[in-house]
Figure (tube, rainbow, N blue to C red):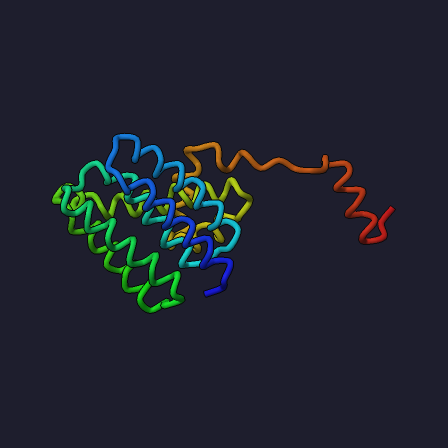
Length: 185
């Protein structure tokens, strides 16, 4: 794992722990904000570890209110363990903690279990759409988020994500530039 990516993930985990340190109603909105920040890292780095943390944070945002107190505390302890492993450059331990975190979210509550796959898919699609808005192609965004182009395109077509792109140069200037490149007058 590159040092820059490790620092980004460590920041996201640390911020998640700060939010979850004391269980409050505002945790939901703070997790949503952190999830939105984390997607910037996905667009920038296109790294699977960054994607994994981003999807986890978004999933926590969606299910945190449904978690029992025991499951909530288990998730906090496992996040602390993941943070510790990453700080110690123990990537194997970090990966094991991430697997356990996904398992805890998955098994934590019957309602959570019922909807986790939907939440995970929705997280990937939502974050994939944000990547489109950041300028990535549908193929790149879908590939990074583990989606088919079709899944992402179906959702993105219902939003303004595909319409946001604007050209930096008008059509006439682009044609002149193309003609000059090919020596056409």
